[in-house]
Image (tube, rainbow, N blue to C red):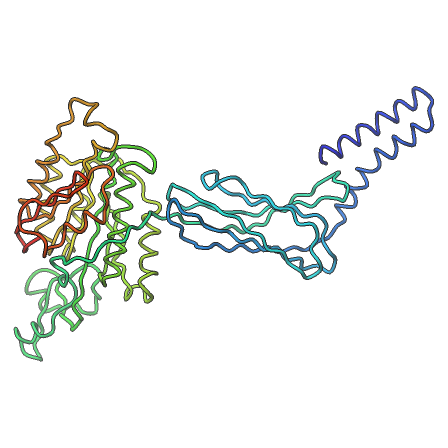
Length: 439
């Protein structure tokens, strides 16, 4: 019963009691009427047999953080009688806004109604929408009957993807397939040119004679088109980031990793996402997913939408993954580093065709440069120099810097082997020829 129904019932019982004490028959009739009306409404509502179906549609299913998405609800009356007053309420997490409520006066037999509402979140993640709750009410508003559908949908709030300018990167066509012309030049058409087994190779290509000869698993080379490969390394260590909420250095790193991954996918790369915990999303591209670049980008963004800070302290697990298959381009988005981690990154550079590092100066995110006396402002510069000597192209990042402007500094055609200043921020680009070719 609603508040109105309980009030009518209490007033009816009070009137009946007063009529008995005062001996007023007219008051008795009024009390009976007041008490019977809400009880009759309950019986009428319980005997109502509406058959209602619902549907929900999201536009879009993946919404960038800070942008709105629209949810469309449809209610169908599949029974042969018109419905009464319907009240709809969709369950929505508090981060997306208040719960939307709608009132539908009457839905004709076999008819439908459509309503919509908007949701918005500054925090990325996966948020459930629903199930939809439906309330039936009698014409007098004495009682309500609540029912809930069982289906729910998921809205994925992905990091904001910033368009990056097209640049020339070293190592664009390394690390994929076997060049047929090279294999034929080294051996005849009928000869087998084996190579070491790589993760993901078909076991039917194993060449057992060469395996026995070399003492390790060898596979036959096959003619495959050369294709560029890239690995996006995201530093998720909690100790390496500063700040909280959407303005933290970690969220900047996630958004930059998403922008780089989508940009490389659009340029035809087969992109793999890797974190310091060893979590590796397999190489994704239009050919791997059997669809368009947008589908491949969606798979990558879905993973970045739920990535969280880790309690790790090093990059050893990521080094193990890259040591097995680290050819091609490596783009790392890094937080604060120590000497051991810089040394590991130097070893990773030897496995890559080219390497670009976004080195976050995390002290600028919360003003630590002016608050903590033990924060060395030259520490990040020292790390830049060590990574540069190892062959990395280093892009120093401060709070407020633009990923697009920094990415332009990684253009190999614009690098002269020295330091390049970034106007309007604290960014610096270092480039040098290291092991494996120019960065």
